[in-house]
Structure formats: C-alpha cells, structure tokens
Amino acid sequence: MSPRTRKAVAEDAEQLAKLAEETFRATFSADNSVADMDLHCEKNFSREIQLREIQDPDMVSLVCECDGVLVGFTQVAWHRAPGCVAAARYPGEILRLYVTSDFHGRGIAQLLMAAALEEIAQRGSDIAWLGVWEKNPRAISFYTKFDFIEVGDHEFCLGTDRQRDVIMSREIKTTSL
Image (cartoon, rainbow, N blue to C red; front, side):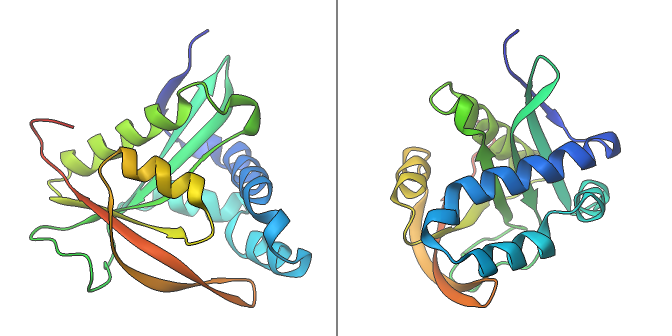
C-alpha cells in the first residue's frame, strides 16, 4: 500500500507518542546526553501530551501511514512567532517533522511537508516558519529545498542543555505550493 497522510485523531495519541519519541531519539541521541534526552522526551511525548496537541484548535497533527502503521508525522501550530518572522497574517509554525528511519528516502518527508504547507495556506497564513537545530545540516538542507531561508535564531532547551535553533521561514502563496 502506498503511504497516505491524514489528520491525526484521538485514537492515534498512543502510537503518535511512541513514534514521536522514537524518531526524536533516533535523530538526536548521538549528539546529546542520555539525561537530557530522557528529560526532553518525558516532558514532550506522552500519550496525554499528544492527545492534548491533537485536540488543540491552534495545532494540527498530521500523520503518514503505510498499511495502518504510522511512519512519520508533522505538527503545525499557530502560536506567537519570534520577532524575526515577518508575517502580515497569522504565521504557521512547523513544530515537528519526523519520519522513521526505515522510511527515509521514500518521499514521506516531502508528503508531510506538502501537507503541512497546505494546512498553513488553508488557515490564511502568509508565512510558514520553523526552528531547526544548527547542528542538523540534513534538516536544514531539506527545508532549503522547500524555499525556507534563515531569518534568525532562538534558544531551544533540550533537557538542561541550551542549544541554538536556526529560525527559517518562507512565504505561503495559496496559488502555488
């Protein structure tokens, strides 16, 4: 079966929490302490947290599934953007975009990004933005392919470790995503 994206529903919360933690650890464990990883995951990836995020009217959680199994996800939010994000209307933040390692290179990340940008456009946002760890060149390169450019930075705390995230943004045109 080919992969498909859809909005997450309450019944996805458990599987989404596991997927979020698994992909986050796979991406960042090699460069961070076990204690900081544990603290971050405990604070961000429980079933209850995912359920709250799925039900938040200012967030959209999108999942990609193959044969009924979640293989990737992205989350978009409409909260306050940092000052470096110049938007005229309600900018949308891509909070997370992760794919299980077994599905890297299969176009899942591109499907999720397209779905996230479509959600942002549907809400009437003129800017999409995100924060990406400065030490994640693979992600920065991926976002650049979708016309994101660096506009600033901010601090991201992973556990107790203060890290620098690059803030990237791109214009949203409803006629051509």
